[in-house]
Image (tube, rainbow, N blue to C red):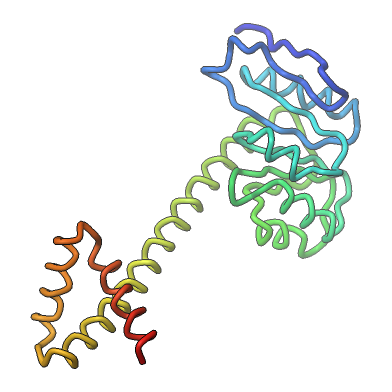
Length: 214
């Protein structure tokens, strides 16, 4: 395996050899302690060829992570409070990417708070080299699973809303033209085809126009 090479561009940045781009992950490490950050980078390099950005200051964290747009964020906190945990989790963009959080100790309820904040993996008893890869793999898998669930849920809600609008549009046509439900839907569909639009869009336009005229 090619050694993982880094170079210090600014105090919080490490970048692995760019020739490994096709096989590496982009990882942001949030770690204020320089020595712990070095150990984490070495452990990640031992696990694979990755692009690693180390952020030691949490000021402007959301902006820095957004600019980096990593595949995953790894946060190491020695002794988190609920406020700090939630602030770091939300700043890491848990809805856009997996976030793995390692803590040395955790008070009762913090694990649930972390999960509610969107953290994909919350590991108590500190960060150990041998745990990095399996935890990151699990965090990414869990994130993908929940993102698919969110996508499917959003699609289901959108379909239900569109069905409600179509039903309202059919009701308007039935009342205005004295036709039955089947004829009303056929009219909506024919209009949609003639205009090159979706039935739901035609129905929404009709309902909106009816609302303006009422």
